Length: 552
Image (cartoon, rainbow, N blue to C red; front, top):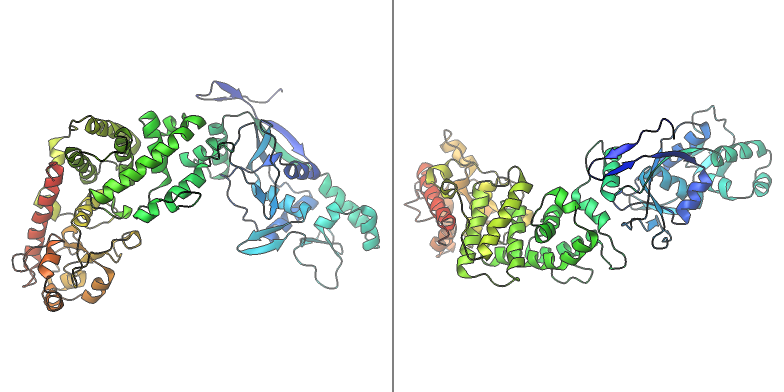
């Protein structure tokens, strides 16, 4: 067609061009009702309220532009919405072309719900879309003739009734309003809805089109694209449901990450673990190149490897909450190790080398930038460990001095801070009042004020007694239970430790589990904060040095 610009899509070898056309209301309705027009599952939920849908009808009656529908005509079998509100939509025969809505879901769903006269659930309330009316006593020149209320005293006709009822029946029901009924029905049924159709675009390109027109250029996540690309009804594979089952259980899955305290693992990590197994790369472009069958075939192996990795982190590294991980991405290379090792128990030397790798990545803040590239590089390190050799590191990266540790401020989002917190967690910290093991929970480890984090020298105490010193230091943090934290408050360490000792004769061992030694040597009995910082930083640096040297 003259004047139509062809779009050359980089990397596809295809020259693509959108097609401009228009559709009448009844055509849109029939194509949705027959299952020809579908909503991809990466679309957001229907969020328009009934008032906004009424304004849409009012705009159509006035002849105002309402925007363009963008449809993707494809034979791709993607995960799509199977119901609009409480109304099920039919499935198309395998291989038939479907038109997936990339832009215009809210408008199109409103038009369908009104024409069909169905109920939709919005904000927990069921809304009947038959209850959108035209006030036949008003003229279109007035502000708005379409309303969600039919007040007493006026003449109101349901838009659903106008579109679906026979003209004769409507004329009889609303005597004297024939001209208005005919005019409004014609305006609705003959309105041209502008439509752009893209045909046979690759799914990744179609998803990119969707992202650009719906979120101001913000890309869909690779997970959302892969959920669309890997959907296979015949093989009963739905990546979103598989992900949900992996994290929370259900759908036939008994074991799940939530039961292990690792429910905060992001979607990207799960997806990248599959890619690590299939392609030895976690880069986005490599993930998108994985075929549907290739991905589905690797899913069970990836899931098993993730569970093995989590069991290792909990059992061998002693870390029982995913919120403590320096980076969730550390799951990926450790999962690859177990996949290559047939999910067998690692040898003693392999445990040491995996522990070294884990703490090296956290302490050096390995994944603070260029994460995809660095994780991909680190896949080779675990391959080396599987092969029986030790990975190579820069010796300076394996150096942890007390002076460096002493200067670190406490920010629970910092990878190096989390590396130290993992050391403390791995030491099985005990409650200071009864020597019970401290329960570490993701809910209580998110932010600096979370209940599992305790400033051994309370911040208020340090600010008052040692105003020249920083209270919020990493070396001043202990992982304790919320109840003990509340009891301690802002008391001086010498005071609350003496009180705790009265009820807990084994307090010395409890303190040792937090890498805090003798109360006199650590300056606790004299409330000597400077001495405490010096001694605790030395203790933490020594523990970190052991794991970084792979001697633990």
